[in-house]
Length: 406
Image (tube, rainbow, N blue to C red):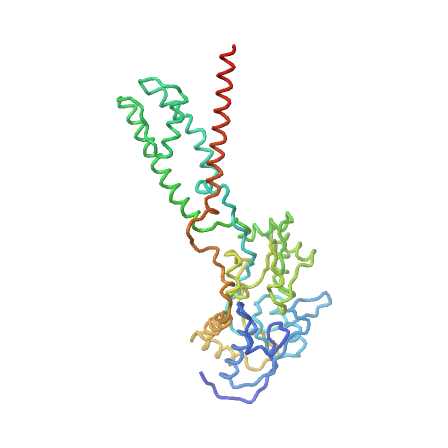
């Protein structure tokens, strides 16, 4: 889209970066927000017909209000009339509206967090995974109860231990050879057979999937869980320096958000967006920020939460004295309607993935053939059972000899 040109040169602020000449730069495995914003700025400038000089905040901050009323970072440059506009992926909020202006919205900002992928669950007790503990605790008393009922129903008397082991065997699809032709017993056996069939089929289906697809620990998945983990000291949460999300947390009416924000502030848990984000990843740390920052092939080895702190609109930040807001809004609406911003994002995601090493792609979630490592828990159970049987056998022999001596 072309609009009549006018001779105008603006000073434009980009998101905090070490090098402002980043339009042709690509971060391996990470979609760069400064690159995306710089390309969108270039597209807007060509559509409106203006030229520009690029700036970046020297302090590397997006912008917070200080106690004396002044502002830092991107917002400070605009507030002090040192810049005309900012394509800095800044969210709209009340405090910023008081001193600055915004264009129409061109995207939204989902504030979430990312952590290292939780460790794989050891397969020593893999045979326990298909059912929850509540199911196992229900089965434990159910087997002796059914054994007692069957013991009372059978006409040819057998020991309770024989009935009990037979009922356990039925759970493993072994036949039940009890002689009883009464209708009541057949009804009892039919319902037990239906129950066992359903349970064994469910167990087998889930058990096989657990063996072929590696399982991970639950980890921290929601904002509430993150707040609790930070409170207990098992996790730390890092915010971008100068992010308005800190004030949002501290001023929230929800206690868990207040506690999270206070912990971040008291412990000075912040990360510099100008540095490589990989420098801040640790096993027990969570990085907070806009979801678009956590886009790229490198994050296949991370866990990005599906929960969020909130969604904020994003627009071009304007100096209060900016001359051409209406014209800028018309251009932005036209470009967004045509899908140009989304295309810029997709192109950057694709470009950042070029040259990524194959080992950078996480394959731990892929299916694989079963090996001894997947099955060693079952073998341990088998050998443990044989050992217990041998011990019981020796005890029976000794007990028999003791009785003979008496």
